[in-house]
Length: 377
Image 1 (tube, rainbow, N blue to C red):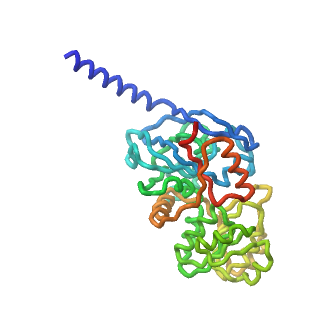
Image 2: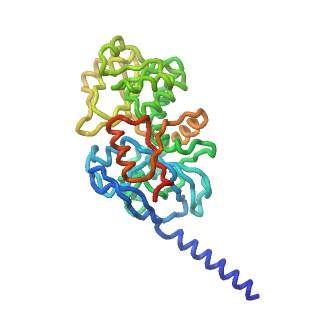
Image 3: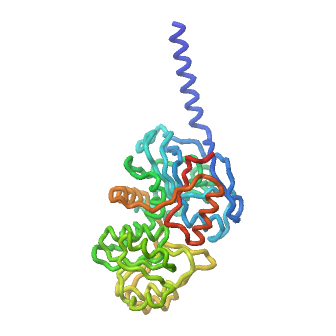
């Protein structure tokens, strides 16, 4: 009898401790910058407790996006520090709230640029949560749904979020390559499908980096004839290897001859200053220019209104990532068709991240850095 009572008591204590742990903030560790100098350091912080509809993910891999560099450097306006960047996250679920239905412990899960939104506005109802005025960004934001807590990103060992904003990763996916799909993948996949690109279309990809090389793969898979535009020669062979029909070095005048009125669709992924009007003139009648790259504010290109008036029904539109449903669709499509970013895996250390950032700034990355967060000490 005493033994039975002892076992019951142990079970009650275990259950109590489990419930108590669920109500406690989650201790996290990662890499942060304390100012816009780009210097990273080890950083410990707390995330909110796992709620009834939330999951905790052990982060295994975190991609480095060019927008991370922009935010760290304050290129897009005033930022708050300390900042843990990273909105390309792949990992494994380690805890679930009592009302969670879409995930269980042990599942693979990803996180992109968003961790919450209002859920009831016009954009949310349309599956366009990225445009919700109350959308919560994965980092460098304030989460009004959790006491206005400052959000911190994926250069860390764990993250907590509502299950509705986590992306299911198929078990057979190449996990070390998945993280960049949650930003670079959806950022290019979404406008390509919105524009209705189809087999046989002549299309252009402007900027052949982390975003651009994903756009090339999606467009080639659709059967489009792809021309890649970039500023160097050292990616010409890579473009051909990925299926591009033509490569144009925009710094070579000879390469630019005869391109006006030649393509149906161009996606611009350029994160630096450039002339968008040059690409507008390359569009055929009713052609579309999709802009997804965002340069620093002090180098932001412009398209004068008069240039649009004389463009013969050519269209310009911008696109920001994609909604959660479309992101899941993109990931499933990418894995099913073996479309992944080309990545270089780096260890989770401040020097490695700083070196990667410099290579991104110098254009010396082919094509995406991914931090192995399992190596963090």
